[in-house]
Image (cartoon, rainbow, N blue to C red; front, top):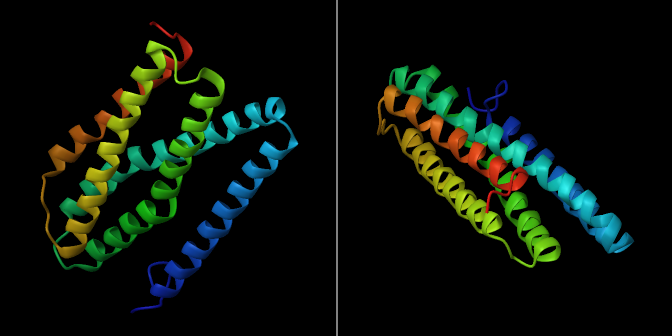
Length: 180
């Protein structure tokens, strides 16, 4: 079965290669923008930051759904193996790189545009730290599911699905409304 279809080792290597190429292009593009001038680059880097955040959020919202379905699958079954591969790839190919770029670009924008000033910015960064903690918890759960340890119930994962949503709402309010 190894190497067959979209869940085999070969498909995984191809997915990692494509993700690595995309990451290099993304970083190269960001570097090029920086070289063209600070004012022009700032808006482009902000756009790239938003793209990275959207990608990260997509993973944070989808991963608990995979955990719910994985919890319902019989341990050791083909279905459980498929969910495990999906979870690993989502984490490694999308979520880890998107989180890294979100942090990298976000910290640059906070430094360059705001000199880390403003209560709203501190609140936003605190909420992003919360998203990072959720991300790391999901990464641990991916490893547990891979070992066959179903550490939580489907109900728990349904509730966990709400945490990234609430943090995202807070972040958007902090950035757009700047309440303090």
